Length: 171
Image (cartoon, rainbow, N blue to C red; front, side, top):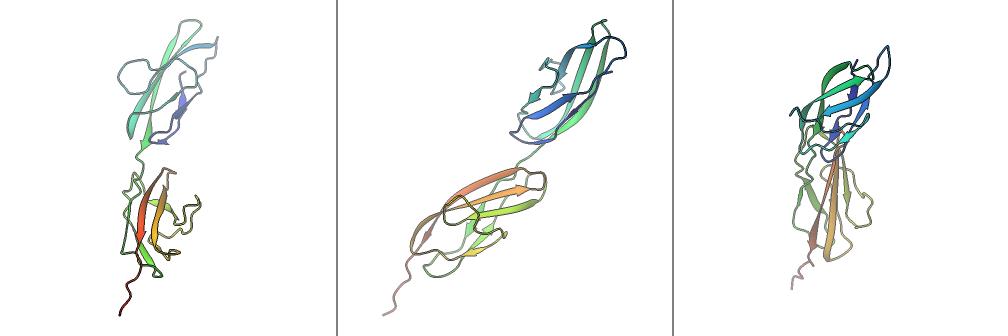
């Protein structure tokens, strides 16, 4: 009896298929996997992986054969989740004043769960608010990174250079 499970993954991550086929007499000796419902055998391994070309729901078919020549087919769906796309904007950045950041992330299949803002370019988040503010150390250009993770665990990040201007001197 053909049977398997497949993981639902974020776009760009390999989907893992785990065969759980069985037979009461003899052994399962071949596995024909069709990952895209196109009637083309994509893999013959017992427990393959496959990277899908786009997000979506895919019907997967496994046909197994035993050493006695019997065959059985089973199919089920796996889902490839669309990744979020991290985006943000900022207001005017002036030295010694807080700069406000606005999250403009495009959601993939599900809501954003985590925002990680790196203002000092050290690779570690300095703030986890959706729309934070930050005071930079002085005038200059600073790379600001926003990394987002959705509730399925899909991730994306982007970095934008923010220019902090000197304050004018009134005279």
